[in-house]
Amino acid sequence: MSLAVRFLALAILLVTALRAGSVASAEVPNLATGRKADESLSGADVSDRRVGSGSGTGSGEARTSIAVLGARTLFESNEADLSAEGGRALERLVDALVTRHVADGSLLGIRIVGHTDGIGTDLYNLRLSERRAASIGAVIARRYPDVPIVTEGAGERAPVASDATAAGRARNRRVEIRVVALERR
Image (cartoon, rainbow, N blue to C red; front, side, top):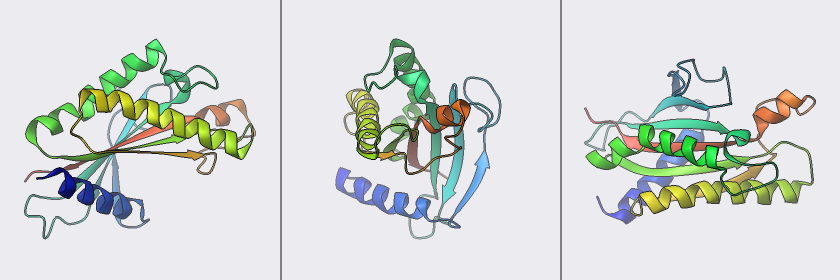
């Protein structure tokens, strides 16, 4: 499949995956701890979602694996450069989620979204989340230069917890890595 076709497929799949109700979700164990997703954001929490019925593609349906890494795992406070620990965590995650799809040609693309808590200005948080997503995208792009990668920052717009507590703010500081691949039948 050509790069342009893969990118178009990625764009269509990402829009489809974001629509509520069009995605059936099934949790899988956390890569680092063996626990289900949402139990801890200190490591990589991973869930899989199937998108579409596969009709018309001829190759099966798309599967989006979503990994959520807590910002504390990846970055120092208010920084966008990966820490040494963050680099190692990202390498393990990429090995687990991306490598096999590249090898079998089923990978359509990767979408990386950075998030922050609500402390600070909207503009600062948006820019920080954009830089963090771009930092992770650059690492993955160096390893897989032919894979379409989309990065974006959501700032504080999509919290998963209340910013009223330190624990809630920590959960909101995260990076989501969505790996979209065809599920071969």
